[in-house]
Length: 426
Ligand SMILES: O=C(O)C1=C[C@@H](OP(=O)(O)O)[C@@H](O)[C@H](O)C1
Ligand SMILES: C=C(OP(=O)(O)O)C(=O)O
Image 1 (cartoon, rainbow, N blue to C red):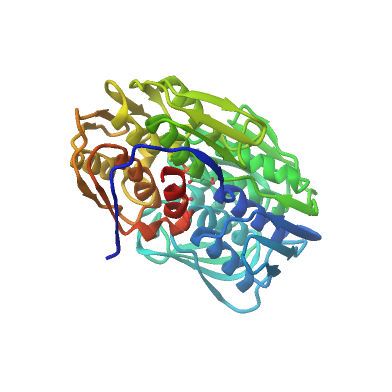
Image 2 (cartoon, rainbow, N blue to C red; image 1 turned 135 degrees about the vertical axis):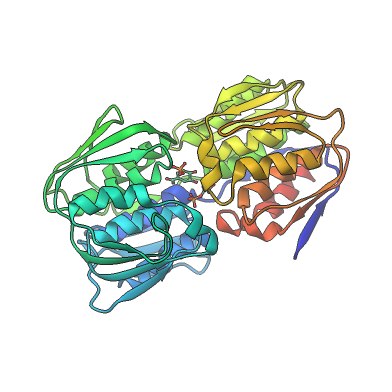
């Protein structure tokens, strides 16, 4: 296994151009494929999750040309749902933003599709989405455990109607249903059953659908109405915003170490909920300013916070390691679904924070972190979770070296992370 040892760091400053958003890249690619017309996409993310979407679209007969650096793409939309004459198997890695939305869009298409992925994908639930799709006519078979991929879809389109979907495990189920809705034969009414987690990701979905010409009547995130007769139409050119979750590591580095870091590509105008990460750093005591397309953070004396971070589950992981440098304990609450992401993130986070000396309470849906007087040197296991690798790079701001096991796992969303981190912390 590859490892990377970070010697103790004391400084972070500079400017970072943040690569494209995973959430936006995969939504834009899917809607561009379904839309009428050609879409020219710039600042596309080049990472495993996006490659899985691109490979699936190619197999589904979508024509596109990628630039050599894979960061811009010209894609000819089908102007309709997918239609495959031969049975297809699509491998989607561990990309939730590919598996869930493609599953719904394929149910609304024609053909026989088998959706596979990495072993961890087979432990990540999808049953709530399938339960919502079946009353609309979807024929889905679980090839392994019920409620989980791999799946076999015998697709013959979706009818309209009124359905309920549970939102307490992943917002991606609702996102998937929303994006497939215009492909259904009639009006679709979606009722959210119970709590909806990760709500800002629904805003990203509605924003992207609107960009492609589809209006959704959002009734307080509890009921969504999508009128039939709407078709996705290409807006022509689309630029993908920088990834707000990827920005969090650099902003946290500035808050911890001193100096000033400005990230470009994501700012006050961003549609991504994770732009609010910097506000959390502000509550911890950092100095924060926003421009339309940038965010800047400088050091303050950091104090612990006690916050519900359900709305920003990805960036919340960065708060967990930033908490190592606060004066006093930090609690991150209402993050049960950390358990069903790339790994069980509550358990992984607790285990690795203890290795550097923190005192940690792991609850069913929360984590409390009391920082040690001095961080200990440790080899951090990353559990094939890009965010474990990235957020533990911040532990190197203590006085002891930190080894990151399998740093290459950042390829899921941010292959060049450690190079950029080295530039900012040099
Ligand atoms: O829709 C999206 O793009 C995402 C939604 C979130 O997942 P959940 O809704 O499962 O929390 C987030 O953690 C994931 O990285 C991306
Ligand atoms: C949860 C994540 O990914 P996915 O899109 O696979 O759900 C993540 O990137 O932190």
